[in-house]
Image: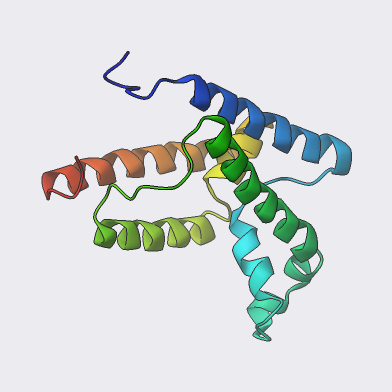
Length: 155
């Protein structure tokens, strides 16, 4: 177990529980689904007048999504201090991070949702499209991780 979790696993259990509780409360109290891929587009609707960003689905949800994103960031900071691990250490090659961001962003738009929306909210509601999306996400992540290790960008 130590080989897989050299820093322990308690913070993963607590974090997963907090995410599950958070999206559950959001849905039960408001009926809203707490995925994050729309946060990007809805936030751009504040500053861009391009028609894509001015769609009603972004305009009508941009305020709560912005607060949702700020809450996630603040939650991460609080958790970092609670587990006495503030700060962030980049342990992968910056090019890999950039390529991964492009791939993840493209995939989120292509699949009409992200890993949090499909993986947490979609699976919990047994949505067939979300189940397929998660299988594709995990398969792609596995292939990508192995490719990055093969070219020396992963440890």
